[in-house]
Amino acid sequence: MKINVTVKPNAKQERVEKTGEGKFTVRVKAKPQEGKANEAVAKALAEYFGVAKSRVVLLHGQASKHKVFEVL
Image 1 (tube, rainbow, N blue to C red):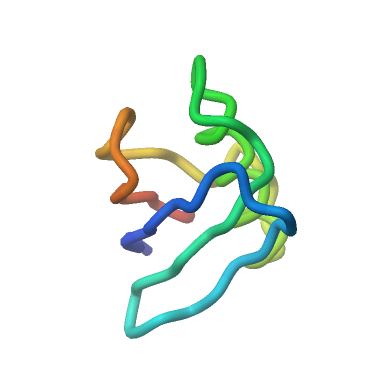
Image 2 (image 1 turned 135 degrees about the vertical axis):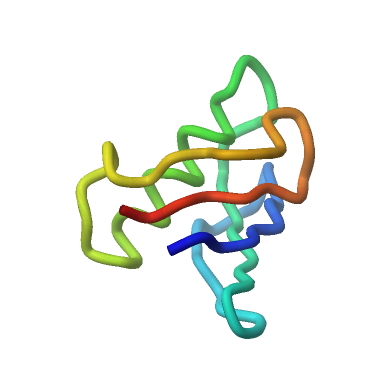
């Protein structure tokens, strides 16, 4: 399943919020440097969906706040 994610880095708390059909806002504590925030988002989504982190793949938006992930 493909999902659209808006990332909020440097957040005080990490959480995943569903904002619409296939749309999520993910808040992570990690800074948007060297892919750390992307890894934190993948981990948060994996926990939210109850799958392994390796089953969450970033498809588009490596350096953007708006990303497309696929959950396998």
